[in-house]
Image 1 (cartoon, one colour):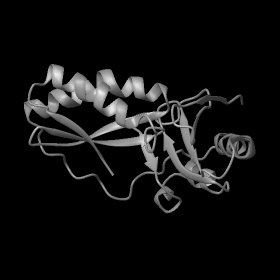
Image 2 (tube, helix red, strand yellow):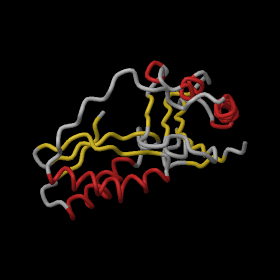
Image 3 (cartoon, helix red, strand yellow):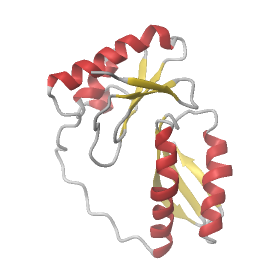
Length: 182
């Protein structure tokens, strides 16, 4: 198995490309080992000293390391963990115990915001090993979750303000601001 790596705009994260599907649909973000209980892959990566966050995308894995460690030290262990997982035959995610609550019907503005995020923003951000997910729209403000390399990235504020906010304000006049959700 050959796993490629790519740098991201966030120096604390590295994007790993295993050359196969990681998640069929959606993404998964694990802020710590406790949150990773339903992902054998994420649990395995958190066993590597210095791994602080794991994000799973469609065909990539983004790992965030501790600021005190160098990628030259931690990268071989992360590559080994990814390889071990995919050769083990275990699923990337185990089935959720509880069924998701049905979502409320979105109004037309929210549908338009989500469509723009899904078609124009998320594919571009995924190239850098991250994801941006809609949280809510209140009083003209769009709240977004930053995942993967976007979480804690030094350029994420510029991406939000100069890129996403300008795009949404252009196409959806009701949008006045975009803010990250912690």
